[in-house]
Structure formats: structure tokens, C-alpha cells
Length: 211
Ligand code: NAI
Image 1: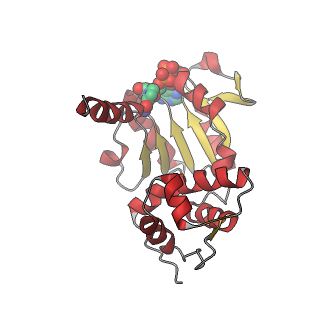
Image 2: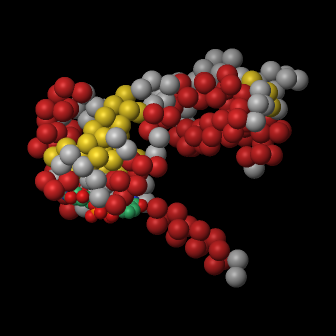
């Protein structure tokens, strides 16, 4: 089966979920799974799963199912998480600290190489073994370490100049927790916006429709 290099965005959005489920299977020492079993677990149709996985080379074998480890490795490659790059976090406040402590970036292809904050009082404070640096150090740090991505946990009002600065230092991917629309000003950036409350409102819609 040929690999399709133009995998649709909706398939890509499902891949992290496949990756997570396959990881859970491996933890249970399950080495192969049929598309029917996977579909029951993931509450997708078996044909949807076959279609999704065929996009990148059809790992299933008729009558055998999927090799869990191979499929998970392939998904990791497609997502690019098999290659480690450096990421920095900007804004070591409540959210920045929580992310630093609870997200194991290394599991997802990123080494959290630096944490930066503009508050001088936070300089050298350690979170998860990493010392916070003042944002004045960004230029030197980026020149020496070449991070490719930034996590933004700063106030919305500070986001635009920060993104501008980071882009000038070679970073063009942002895991954006601020409510600033990066793509409006920087259409060439790679951006993933995370708004936890969007998820809450979506749940609210579903829950309240049922009443
Ligand atoms: P916080 O006030 O606890 O932390 C913000 C930190 O950013 C402070 O340590 C501050 O010194 C630092 N900072 C301010 N300007 C900076 C700059 N230009 N460069 C570097 N550091 C700078 O705020 P919190 O609660 O951690 O929230 C951070 C951001 O995340 C806010 O924009 C907030 O609205 C957003 N947020 C988003 C959520 C989401 O689901 N997307 C959830 C919670 C917060």
C-alpha cells in the first residue's frame, strides 16, 4: 500500500487518540488487534479506522489485524514525535508551572529546554529541575540552543510582541494558551490554540441539549 503524503487534517487530529489507545494496549501486553476490536475500544466504525490507517500505508493484514507496536511507531513518525526537538515555555505563572510539572514533553518529541519569564523575581527559581530565565536571555538562548517551538503562557496583551520576537529568533511553532489570535498577524506560523473553556462550553451544549 502506498503512503499518502497529503493526510487530511481530520485524520491527523484523530492520530493522537490512536497513539494513546495503542500505548494503552502495549501496556497490557496486547501485541495485535483487529480493526473491529480497535473500533469498539475507540468508538469509531471499523471502516473509519481502516480508512484512516490506510492513509499512511495500511498496516493491517487480512485475518491478522494490526501489529500494535508497529502501528504506534508509524503514527509517532507521522506526528513527528519520534524526533526530539527543543521547546521553550514563556510565562512561568500558574499555567506555565502546571504545564511544566504535568506534561512529559519528552514523550511527545520535545525536550523542554528553557523556561522564561519577564518577572525578575522569578529568575533562577526552579520548576521540575529547570531554572527560570529572564526573557532578556531569550536571544542568547535561542541562538545557542535553536528551539523550534514555544509554549505561550503569558497575558494576551504580551503575546503579539513575544511572538514577533520569537519568530525573529527562528521559532515558528506555538502551543498557544493565550487568547491571542497569532495567525491573524503571523499567517505563516504553525499554531495550535488550546482553550480549555471551549471544551467546557462544548460539553455544556451537549449536556443541556439532553435536558
Ligand atoms: P499568571 O499571571 O499566573 O502567569 C503569567 C506569567 O507570565 C507571569 O509569571 C508573568 O510574569 C509572565 N509574563 C507576563 N508577561 C510576560 C512576557 N512578556 N514575557 C514572559 N513572561 C511574561 O497567569 P496564568 O494563569 O498562568 O495564565 C497565563 C495565560 O494563559 C493567560 O493569558 C491566561 O489567559 C491563559 N490561560 C489560558 C487557558 C486556556 O485554556 N487557554 C487556561 C488558563 C489560562
